[in-house]
Amino acid sequence: MGWRSVVLTPHGFVRAALAAKPTMSATRAGGRPLTVVSFIVRDKYKVNGYINAEHLIERVERGRRSPRSRHADRDNLRLIIATSAV
Image (cartoon, rainbow, N blue to C red; front, side, top):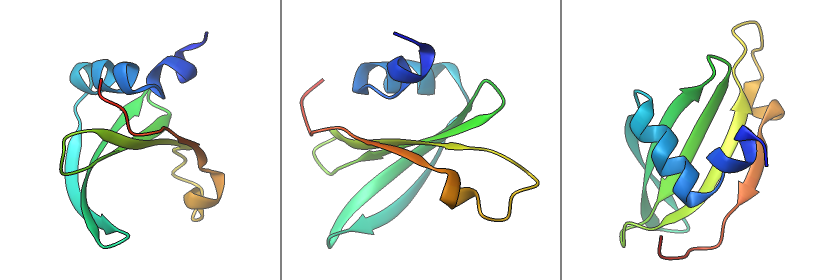
């Protein structure tokens, strides 16, 4: 299992976020409030984790960070993780 797979699991996401300098923001999805925790892995990949009101990770997504790309969202690779207690 490579580092990408580990970071995209709920447990790996939390460990990687604690080791990085994460930022937090608020958003809404489906009318529900979510907290977005974002950080950069290996100075190249931006990782976003979406945490619900019950403090469970609902989704983790990874995108390539490229200062030359104006359409970074097109490059996003998403992994949907079922809500589960960690």
